[in-house]
Image (cartoon, helix red, strand yellow):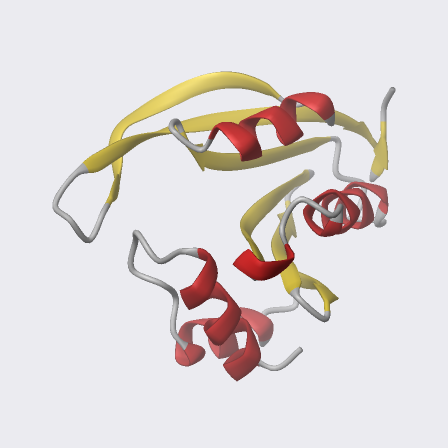
Amino acid sequence: MTADEMAAVHARAFDQERAWNTAEFSDLLESPFVQAFTHAFGFALTRSVAGETELLTLAVDPGHRRIGIARGLLCRWLDAPTESADTAFLEVAADNTAAIALYLDLGFATIATRPAYYARKDGSVADALIMQRALTFGQRTE
């Protein structure tokens, strides 16, 4: 999936917030620490460094949600070798109940909150939940 395609999917998936643009995706994809896990209708972008791996963004085209694409992308990330990472992190809007349920089901737990982290186009804000999960050298722990 190209940076242009990622930007288009991201814009459709995050219509309440400012979507990331092609240049932002291009810059991230050039980093040796960033991995892209792709599907025809979505992608996960992650960064792994210093024993940690972080989900930077996960986007699925709204017309193709709730059929397992996000779960599949996340499982590919969690199963990927990540330079001996022993912890996985992510941030999610506190009002994104579908995503939170998925992350909890995959073993993530909330460890902190960032108040008013996400600014919405309508002027409202949403807290960010910081979630983490233990890994064993790049492999999921059950």
